[in-house]
Length: 87
Figure: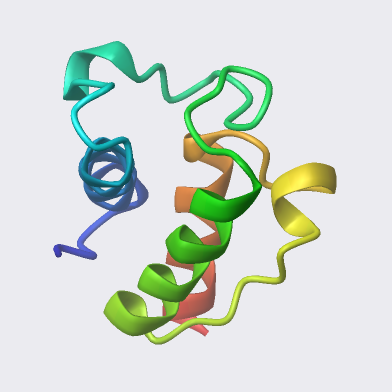
């Protein structure tokens, strides 16, 4: 998974969401600016798996409350991950 830019990370996150959806979503279904939970891209269980995959792939820790109160869109989450990778 590329980390050249936040945009690369956002695309990788879209691919992860597609994998987690078990065929319910396609890459093009996912709007990077939509609230992940409100849009149904992730639910509470898949959010936990997503955060574990983020830690595994990019070696950054993202608190689960971030998905509710901070990085609520994939764009926000990508910027957060990119920033943590740069520090």
